[in-house]
Length: 166
Image 1 (tube, rainbow, N blue to C red):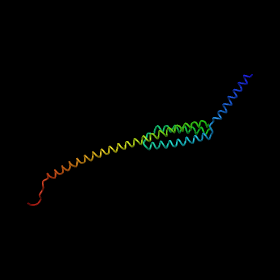
Image 2 (cartoon, helix red, strand yellow; image 1 turned 120 degrees about the horizontal axis):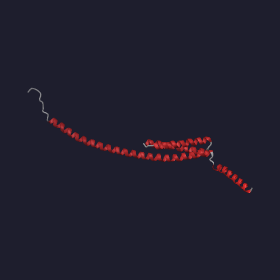
Image 3 (tube, rainbow, N blue to C red; image 1 turned 135 degrees about the horizontal axis):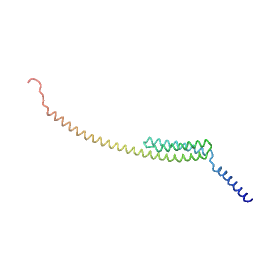
Image 4 (cartoon, one colour; image 1 turned 135 degrees about the vertical axis):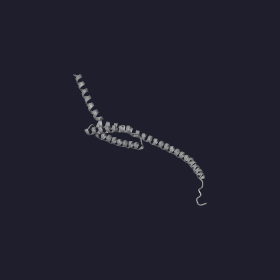
């Protein structure tokens, strides 16, 4: 009988430990709500970073795909919160925040690269325009000399016409 008593006590202890351990590590509704708020703020700021990168001329198609994924995580976290599954909501909100942090840094990098590319294009365009204007000026001088010489020769070859009764 002692073996059955020990076995019963062990099973009872394991069940109680499982119940209380879950209660100790459970996520409270306030923690889940705070994680959801942080995830929403991070997602909103990531959208701002991506919009700035787009205004700078960066290719943001990959970032938009990742934002949609992060938005899906946040929506699923809100659904879990509303159903009372605070642990899942907390976990999804944390995953959303970490995904969004990477998006914000990538958007900043793309924005800087786009601004550098814009500056390089601007300098290239200014250089090409300067060379083009210089060539146009030199060709205009040669054309003027040619036209002036042609006109002077034409005027000198003209014979005066005398009108009147002689």
